[in-house]
Image (cartoon, rainbow, N blue to C red; front, side):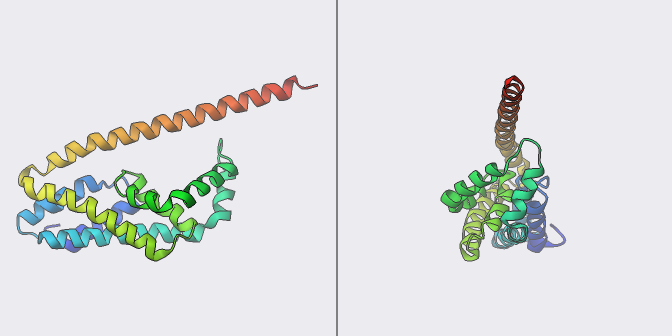
Length: 199
């Protein structure tokens, strides 16, 4: 970031959208710290990182658009414990709550990147998608950059705090995933028993 300034921060955030293991919770406060040291302006940090967020999200939107509904259902049908009906229920949910999901999804680790794919699959109107993504990203990025800027050399304290939030989200996702697998295995077992017991 010291060498590339705002564009470097924007590039890092664009990559974070494509590769979630690159955490924005580290990149953004560091950009704020770099701005506090004169490596870039605060305005530049916010503008470039928001642009990076939108570009990364747009790439995933286009991926979802190219994948399409039919291919997504075909892929889901090949996955263990996943049914085409699951995709259809998710699709119905997204059609009802898609705008809220895209906006508020920008504040949730992992989900922040992945939400762009169903938006593309469902062909959400591109201007709406870009506006929601830009607005949500602007709020998220500004908060973290401002924290890093205010804390200066202690910018990592922002990361430490948010890592607890990220871990809590991951725990919730893990519990939901295990519950899903458990319910599916249980239903599958009962179905096999019924089939074996049938004359």
